[in-house]
Image (cartoon, rainbow, N blue to C red; front, side, top):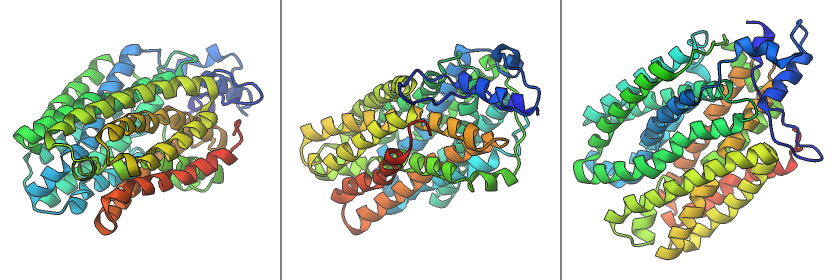
Length: 434
């Protein structure tokens, strides 16, 4: 594919003396000007490779992300019930969260390669179909290890989805609104927290956790049909396995991956075991857990949308400095707020906001970094960063389980704070113009 077609609509991360609103299309124009080929300097001349702006397409992506979000996060709400059903301890059952995250890590950078030349629309449809089958297996499984394997496959498809969806959201966004488009796409995850996770937890408590996955199968079917009907066609771009090696050899890209892993993962040291924290430390009744998760999810939606707006206005580095400072304070505060029902509810609201406010900035930083430091293998660098989200989740969930099993659940908040610290140090040392 010509070089000027590969470099699509990536925001200019000009955060120098006076931060201005980010325009991903501006960086496209800048990159094309310096391309060795005879690339058009007029951005309008490069538009044939850009899909038409499509708000309906973003809705299809958000609906698909909703299905991914419910599947990923639902285990945290019903983990005690799942552990009892399979006759295992909660730290062992926690591997259903960890293995999903490991699947995302593998799926994002590796499984996107064989389908990379397909139209993005058909990539999404294939991805959602396999995701549907994996959840169908979970819905009918009575064996822990079969469920574990199906969770791994579902996680792989989750990773593939967010690579495709991140690129697609940028390409169909209104010029100058790319970060807001990313936030809208990711809003499917946060809406899942508001509606899907509390409703799923309630259904799981009333009808058994398998019923949740039957619902996910139904919703994924709707998402698949929606993508087929309303998603515009978006040209794919061939990627190679050798590009994976290149994508992990660039120090400045590694910096972005670490920031993503730590920023996204830190909250999961707490969130994976939030039901047990609320039951054991805060002394809530089991029946109140879905309502509390509803409050958390509402806060996450607010945080995600605020994060998109701040990233458009201030840039990703400055946004991440603010978010990570907030994470360290708010996660650490959970160490004492967990013993008060009022304080823990306030803390969870703040945790929802600060956990998701960083996601648009992380995705923006990834895209900008890939187009600045990964010329010729930009999509691969983006896919590795998408995997980094769940490297963080997998490590954080495993760490949370180890702390729970060997030290005590009351220490999970302290380790969540420490998990975010490396990312905070990196963004403090990162120039605002990267």
